[in-house]
Amino acid sequence: MSPVFRGEQKPVNRSGLTNNAHDHDGVAHYQRPDPSRRHRRTEKSMRRRVTLCVMSGIAAATMVLTACGSGDGAAGGNAPGGETLRVWFPGNLSNEIEWVENELVPAFEGEHDIDVQVEFVDWGDLSTRLSTAFAGGTAPDVFGHGTAATAGFAANGRVIALDDYLADLPAEDIADMTFLDHGKIDGQQFIMPLRGFGYLLAYRTDLFEEAGLDPFASPQTWDDLRAAAEQLTVRDGDRIERAGVILPADNPTSMTQAFATFLFQAGGSFLDESGAKVTWNSPEGKEALNFLTELYAGPDAVADGLGEPTSGAGAQHPLVTGRAAMSLIDDATLKSIYEQAPDVAESIQVSAPLGEAVTASFGGAGNGLFISADSKMQDEAWAFIEFLLEPENAKAYVEVVGGIPARSSLAEDPDIAATPYLKPYVDAVAQFRGNPNVELWTQLRDILSAQVERALRGVTSADEALDASAAEATALLEQG
Image (cartoon, rainbow, N blue to C red; front, side):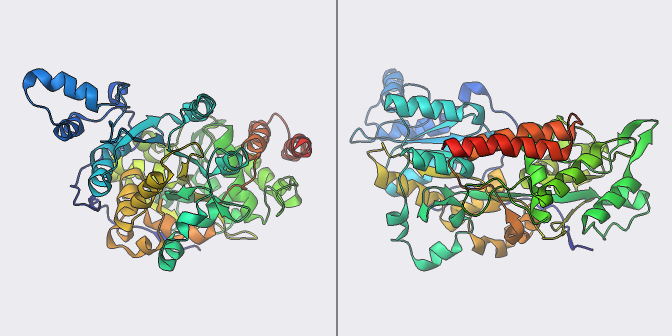
C-alpha cells in the first residue's frame, strides 16, 4: 500500500516577508471579500500613503487621498516621478488580498522605492479584462494568470521572454525554482510560477475503520481504489447516501482534471511530444475514462455529486459532512478543510499518487506572473516578481494562499514540513504532471471537457466521447 501522511495541525507562522513585515492571520481561504474593498488599499495602507505626501492639516486629508490614491479605487498611488507599477493578481481570496496589500506591497515599496498599484481581478473576468486592456493600451505592467495561458500570450506577443533577467540570477536560485520549466515555450521563459498544485487521494480514517478497512493502508492501484470504494459506499435503496469516492467534478474543466489524473496513471497523454497530435483517445485514455465512468454508472456506482461545487468547500466538503469517504482533492481545498473543520481534518489521511502503469497525478505549476510587452517599466516589473519569489516571501505566499512552494528548498522548511495540508503535496511534486504548453490548449481542453462530462453523465460512452473530442480537436489543430 502507498505511504500516507498525517500530522498535527499547528498554527502557521505567516511572517517571513523580507523588510521586517509583521505577522497577520489570514481569514478562511475561500471566503469572498467585501466588494467595496476588493480594489483598494486598507485604511492602514492609505494612511501610510498619506505620510509620503508632504501635506498637513485635517482639511487637506481629502486632497491627500485624492492626490496619492489611484483615482479608481485600486491599491496604490503615484510615484514621485509620476510612474506607478501596475500589477493585476487573479482571483478574490480575501486572505491573499490582505497579505498582498498590507505586507507584500509595503515591503517591496520600502525596499525598492517603487510605487505599486495592485488590482485583484476575478478569474472569470480576467481574460476579457486583459484583452480589453491590451486593445486599449492600458494593460498592467505585471499580471497573473494560469500557466495554461502561457503559449497563447507568447504567440500573440503580449508578454516578454524573461531569460535575460533570469541570466542575472545565481545558478542556485535557478535550480531552486521548482516549476520554472513549466513556464517555458520553445525553450524561452515567459511566466514565473508562484506556486504549484496537485490532486491526491484523501480519505477519512474513521470511516475506513467503520467499514473494516485498515486506515493506514491506502489504495495503491485502481483495483484497490474500486474495492475500497465499494466497501465504503452506503446506499438507501438505489440512492447513494455516502459515496465511496468522489472526484473533482464542479464543472467540465475539473472533470477533465480528474480524467487527466487517471490518463497519466494509465501511461497516456493529452498530446504527443510535438504538441500537434491529439493522443487522449489512445487505448490508455479510453481505459482511464471507462474506469471513471464505471465509478458513476449503474446500480453498483460508488461515486456521485457530478456538478456539485466542492473546490474550496471547507466545512461543506462531502469528506467533512460524511457524504463521501474518499476524495481526489487538490491542496487548496484540503487547506480550506483544515481551516474550517479542524476536528474532522484530524481524521483525514492523504495518500501518495496511485500507481497503475505510472505513478502520477494531475498537477504542476499553478498561477504565475507575466510582464506585459507594452510595459514601460519592465525592469521594475521584474524587480517585483523577483521580490515575491525570494525564499521568505515565496514561503509566506503559500502559507497564506496555499499550494506547493515555488522553491524546492522550502520542502525542508520546518513550518512547511509541519503543515499537514502542504506536506503530502510537496512530497509528491515529482509525480505531478500538467497541461501541454501549446497555444490552443485552452480551446482544446474545452472541447475535451464537454465530452468528458457527457461520458460521466452517461449521455455517451467513454470511447465515443474521446473519439468525438479528438476529431474536433484535430480539426482545430489543422486549422492552426
